[in-house]
Image (tube, rainbow, N blue to C red; front, side, top):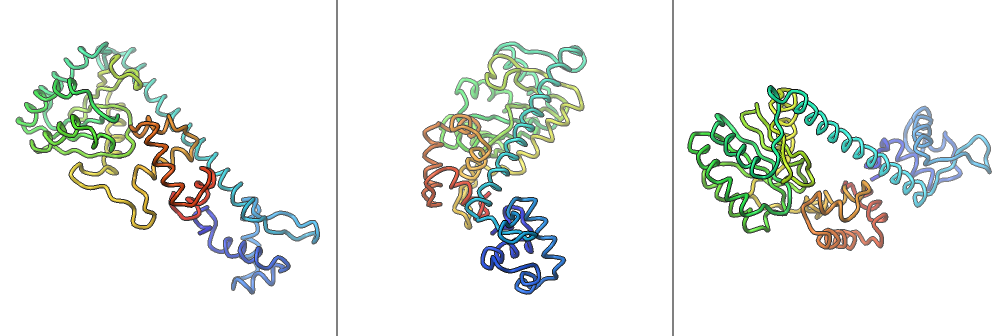
Length: 325
């Protein structure tokens, strides 16, 4: 179990032995764990770096094990802080990519990009892209539901493209499985031979045509303000890679999402644990998952009850110990 927190197997054994046999020295620990004394010294260095052992006051020159209630909780807190820092770095990288797209589109509008202001301009460009598509159209559609009028507006172009042999692959969030308008539209696409998948969390809204053109929102928080039509090869390739990564972990719409047989967690509950463990608020997690704040709190309450936890911090510790994350 301790290995899930990053300890090597030998260090975990030594740590347990030190807790059970606090009077043992290196030689006794080596004999008890069935390893060489050199391996015990290496394990003590690893445990020291993780702050799981401290210098003994009673026995100068020796170390003592820190109780799991303190040492492992502090270790998990550090890991959570590292995760939050990595997520912040990822968010900064995404923002940098968005800025790059905007800057490139503004600096070279004629050759590599164009700003489209307003929903009418976006719909007109989508119609044009659908008519000129040759091989494939890839779409990412985050959010709990799609506006019925937007879905209706996209039908003619998609039907025409599919009739010409264009492959359409669409990604929606899991929460849209409960939206009748989006579900009906997705099944209509499936009936025409397209592919539709869903995932708990998706990247920003995106349309890719023939891996040569992309349409991304100027403001991901309000996609109706406007979009950027991008043709810069490097940016389009990066956006295509982003789509393929999300597609590879998504589930076909016709498939039933099942709980993990070992943890009992659904994909949504696992993503929720990761988001909240990374410092996200209920509101931010709800937005990322395309759910209401009330639904997020209900999911979290169910997970805490399953873990027998009285707080989210305790739930995080128990989930990590059980290898759920």
